[in-house]
Amino acid sequence: MLLQVPTVLNAEQVKAFRARMEAATWIDGNATSGYQSAQAKNNEQLAEDSAEAKELGDAIIDALSRNQLFFSAALPKRIFPPLFNRYRGGQQFGNHVDGAVRTHGPSGLRIRTDISATLFLAAPEEYDGGELLVEDTYGVHKVKLPAGDLVLYPATSLHQVTPVTRGARVASFFWIQSMVRDDAQRALLFDIDMAIVRLNRDTASHPALVSLTGCYHNLLRMWAEP
Image 1 (cartoon, rainbow, N blue to C red):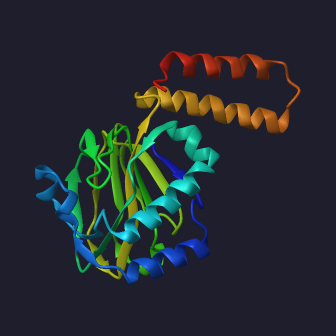
Image 2 (tube, one colour; image 1 turned 180 degrees about the vertical axis):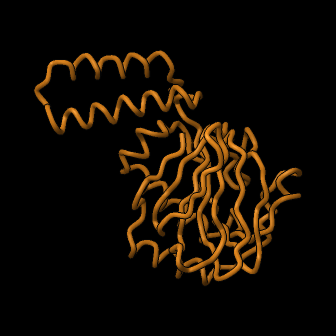
C-alpha cells in the first residue's frame, strides 16, 4: 500500500526544521548505506548521531504519535529514528530495495523494515527532478509531495530518487516495524478502519458498525505481533 499522509508538519514547523538543518554539518549519505545501496546512492545526510538529527527526529516521532491516519495505516510497533538527506547538483539514488533489518548505531535499536517512509521538507517548486519512484504490481508511481507531507510504502518495493537538476531536495526518511508484518493484511485493516470512520461520520447509529468494528479488532487480534 502506498499512502500520502498530509501535513505531518505544518508550514511553521517545516520552516524551523529547514533553518536548523541549514546550520548543520552534512556528510556523505553513504555513511549509513549497505554495500549494495552504496553502489547506487549519491547524496548528503545529517550524521545520525548529530544533535540536529536527534532533535528533529524526536519532533517527527512526536508529530506521528498524534496522527491517526499514520497510525491506522502503519500500525507501528517500532519506528527507526528519522534520518535526514539532501540531493542537489545532479545527485540521485538509483533503483534499490531497503535492507530487511536496520540497526541504529547511536541507540542500538534494531527493527524489521516493514514500511518505508519519506517526509518531504522542500516544496516541489524548490527543485527540479528528485521524484521518488516506487514500483509495484500496478507499475511505477511518481511521488513528489508538498513540504510537510509524508509518503508510506512497503519496504519490499523497488524504488529510486531521480537526479535533482535544480535546487535541493530535502527530506527525512525512516522505517517502521508494524504490529502487522504483511502488507496485504495491513491494507485490508486500513480499508476497514477507514470505512468505520466514514460510517461513524455519516450514520453513527447504524447497528452494523458494531459488527464491522468487531471484525476489525478480531482480524487485528489474529494478525498483530504487539
